[in-house]
Length: 196
Image (cartoon, rainbow, N blue to C red):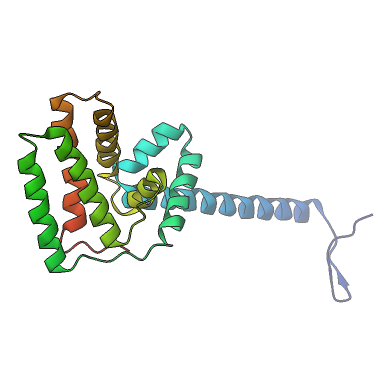
């Protein structure tokens, strides 16, 4: 028979009142733990939404499960930490801007070649900033951590460029691809933007 907790040589009898107090205490502790977990999950969601911008919602919709999507985004943050990114020096930034203007001017006469050149220039800027440039999926995952609001533009521009190489892109598609590439390019060469 359980007589209750023992403190030193003193026994506390287990009465119905003591049992009720212990049950209430357990329920209160469990409620506090549950509230802490819920608040922690909300804070994590809010932090990821702030960090990834529109990429957060796109990932949730693509994955179809908020927890899995947030785990994917957290994994991207972890992967991003492997890369030491840096801002572009002023001279290189100006060089890239001059090259972009030349690529844009080329679009009138050679839209497909201009789009391919825009893709190359974005890759050069990514590499100069310290981002991965090999595997496209890894590249976009890492970029999404710092440029969540424009990384999907980059994905779409890349799809248009691939379609163009296969001969399956209209001039309007190519124009749209240039605009989409420009959104990431502008972010990459922006002077004040230093990512963490």
